[in-house]
Image 1 (cartoon, helix red, strand yellow):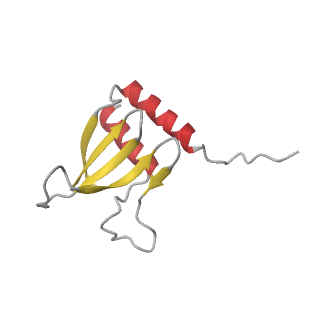
Image 2: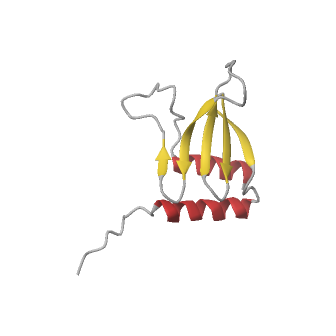
Image 3: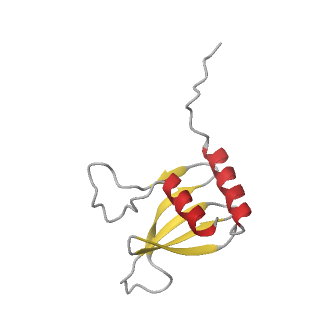
Amino acid sequence: MAATDSTAQPSPAEMFARIQEHFRELGIFGQTLTLTYQEEKYLVSCDAEAFAVYRLVSHCHVPPGQPGWPVCLVTEEVVVDETSAPHVPEDEFASGLSLEEWLKLIDSLYG
């Protein structure tokens, strides 16, 4: 009989389903939100395809659209969290927030 790990992380599909349900409860499922964190702007959305946090480039002259990069992505298959590594605190491409911290920030603003 195999032992089970009580500290096991939920699968990406389980995590995504929880995030979707929370966004539905907040009434923001399917919406694109614009948030500011440490003077940087981010687009946040959760829909049937993904939960995504996308950092916007503030002074970029690259048309069309809004240039930037994803810093957090959750789908049924994957969880990608681009927080800064402990040895690189000034990584300009990292948001500095973990998935859990993004969800807490969203909850504080919309909950």
